[in-house]
Length: 309
Image 1 (cartoon, helix red, strand yellow):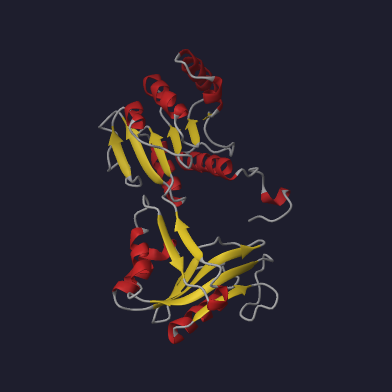
Image 2: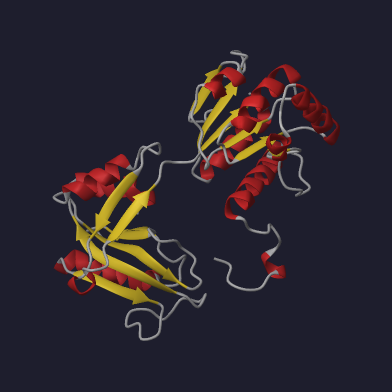
């Protein structure tokens, strides 16, 4: 629901109610996650999606119905005995709750406002049908993952765009003020002109965050990677050739890096996708980050068996 918060608030703050359908459960294979939502405005416009197309018509009908009568519907879509949907083509089913939302629902509207700040953790309690009152549903949006990109180079702009598409809060940091400018990196949430090691020493990165070192200068790379590899960041990657990597590892060892720390380093950075342009390299980097985060194989889905979601 939070992914359509901005569009929902436009309607609500204008005094117009919405019919809202939110996914509360996913059974089997389904294309969207818990929390995905569709809203229908008073003029009939649909906002958002809950299924990637499979049961959008049924969700629209539910939202329109509760918008009109103010009721509350708590059902499964796509499963056997579903009265609303023809079924999900992927074979799964979705638990959904449909309800009318207006500006008078202050706590939910406030949660939508707070969700516009990706740095905030947001939690909201969704209404349930009386028959499911013993199954409360709290929708939580954790703070956005952070990515620190070291180096104000052309690859950094492409990586910032790719990371933003995945929901990361992106900071580009470089010691050279002439290169570390907002004009050069409008995609980033923040651009910092500071020695990267000093910057990393002052930020608190957690196990959902990533550090990508795209410079090729040892005076930047070594002190930066020393701090990065000791941080809680889930992913630490560095750009460079295999020869650069070997020298970098040697220098890091001399600087006191342990085997466990060096084992965390993804270098050369990214998956082997065969590309070399900034955009292609960015895709390879975020693909590796996503693979590491999910624990997936990274192999083509056509070579695998079993559910894909």
